[in-house]
Amino acid sequence: MDKNKLNKILGETLLAMLAVFLVVLFLQLLSLTRKPVAVTCSKQVCLKKFLDGPPAYNDEYMAKFLRNKYIVPPSSGPLTLANYKPYDEKVFNQTQQYIYDYFKDKRNGRFLVLGAGDGEYADVTLELERRQGWTGMLIEPLPQLNKLLRQKNRNAEIFTGCVSPYTYPTQVHCVSPYTYPTQVHCVSPYTYPT
Image (cartoon, rainbow, N blue to C red):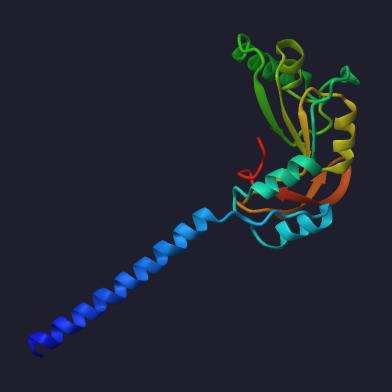
């Protein structure tokens, strides 16, 4: 193969690679300047859209939708507690005491409870809330328990749903000794609004 022909092939190859690089660069810059179209949708339509296929882990529309439709803000009313005893009071009291000792000097902290139940029975964050002014988010997927949780007037946000074991939303069957198996919506942990 002669030198001129080899130079011509190398030149054309480099030119083609440069053209591809410039097209990719242009598309990247274009994607940075364009904002997604605002989506207005109902509860059922949005949820179906998000459960049909995984949105981006940090989808701002999903976070806004969750905040507006599924998260109840902290209650300003007085606590309404049944004051029943934990199933194993000795173990619960030891756990409660350990948590209280560990955070005894921490005021106005934040907690996150997955599977909050009714917000009282065997809840280790309740005393942090009462004694030290803590707040946070209580996540309970089962509608029956979530209804009881809302009646407690906890000073914490309440989310009806669950945390997905994946980086995208899904649906799972949830079982409790107190309820029938229920299919619940789970959201990516990266999508929860803060």
